[in-house]
Length: 560
Image (tube, rainbow, N blue to C red; front, top):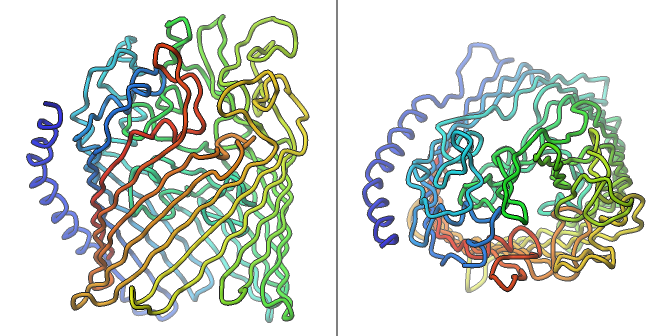
């Protein structure tokens, strides 16, 4: 009966969505300009992208997930056959440039998703409070803003200036901008760019064809890039603010961790009672910084780089429960030092990138929940006091990370006109545990399926064949993606797990290089262990909790 009702809901709203899309496209088209200003030194560009995402759930709900408190709200809010998103999104970008030396750039996005007005209410363990009471089929204000809307956000907002000294150039910028150092393409958790920007996992998992600045969020910072010559360059950045990553929040379709981050309002304790979300333990907002030097000698045919960065973690590290207040907090580590080396060059026609990095004071995967109680020091799962800013209460250590990737273009074959292949391998290795060994998931006392190992390896693959001009003005492509943990259980939070990942199969049409429509199937996979009662007791990575979220997406996008 549920599937029939949701199908009717889709048919009912499809004309409204089509009309909304057409209206939005007309409006944005009227507002898109390359301004013709009677001044050759001044250029103003205003670009807009309108995207409509329709998502239809085709996967059956997994009983183990739906019966696990703290991981089931999003699953139960959307049954099989439900429209999980009807999101209309606008991205607007304005850039002013004077003499190609100075200017500013501002971008922002706005959205609305009426699919969230039709939530289910058959949830016995909702983590959302309404008037202080757990309420099924409701969203917290934070989840409602980012999942349903209507709402919006400022993305980029920075000013820049270029100073020239003969053949040398100094580029300065201040404001919200996006910097990504090193060569990592898919694995920022293991790249030199770890912690350089917050990642919006909600957009990554639940909004196909999102733009880069909607997934890798800009941060307030001051940056300097000094090009001494064609061979040498130096750079620096200093951050003026801190922001944690965004998860698919509690109650949203891809939500898998109901107690976090800002949308999580409660957690169900093992005794069945509720604890409420208190103040999180966050690092200093100001003070993260980075330095680099790059060298491009002629004999190398590429670029080498050396990097140093001090960063705070933007991913949640531990959950700490205080019985005295009956509240829990999410903790984020500070003062992580990253020493990195990068190399990029063409090898046999393949654009190859390598990142090697050593991290000091890196947070390590710790017990799922740390309880504040005056027990014997070193007792797994218990700590003596609440962590202070930038502390986690969990394990800290030193790790080594490597990322190797390649991008290659394939010419015409009997099967396609052209194709692009992208592959990336990542590796992390635990060198030492310097604090909190009793809480470390690699401790022999820990028995979960996600027990951390000394080494972890992962693989990301993208393959996209293209057929040109299948119809006048229309190019067709088939994007295929596959990401998987190959071996081991990463010791760093959300670093990856063996046999856990996701894949997608799509068909995309580009019309006149401006209009794009894509049909895509996505799925997640990963193991978990259940208790005799059928609830999940241990899982290997967050995508394990999304393994019943098979989805068919239809996305339309137009740029002006």
